[in-house]
Length: 221
Image 1: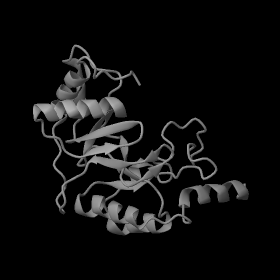
Image 2 (image 1 turned 180 degrees about the horizontal axis):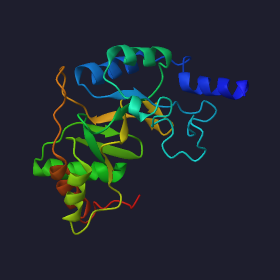
Image 3 (image 1 turned 120 degrees about the vertical axis):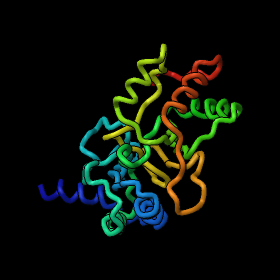
């Protein structure tokens, strides 16, 4: 039992791979933008494509909460400093919803094409988070009832779309997960104010239209 607990602590700590930019980013999100964050579980050092959590089939290695759980997400500066001082390589996980942004995500290739299509229409977007396999467009907080009404009103919604709302989470830059680097495809504008994000209705309407055009369809995953 001691050996198992010791391995778990090593997987969670990441002390041998300090990254000062992570604590700086986590403090910006939490204290300046008031986005509740917490450390994600580190990828398994014995194989970065695997997760350090107990689930051998984890589909988001290193990009999700584990210990502490999602409810521990906070904007408290002291807590954030303590977490990333003790776990300096931990991914930064945003608890979406509430007063924090939510997100709409889709496969990376389809997202790239959809963003290009939206740019041609002149639509204003906020920050876009890019992981190797999926990109996430940050949107204003929404309720599950609001999302349900929005989707119900549509004739078709691609199954490749995922929604990160209340009770959800999203890894933020400059985290490193089991799937690779998390980066900004569209970075927030410099400054201390919380970045502007669009309403979910506008993003879903535009993305669904872009994805259903010929040549911009997304696989159903």
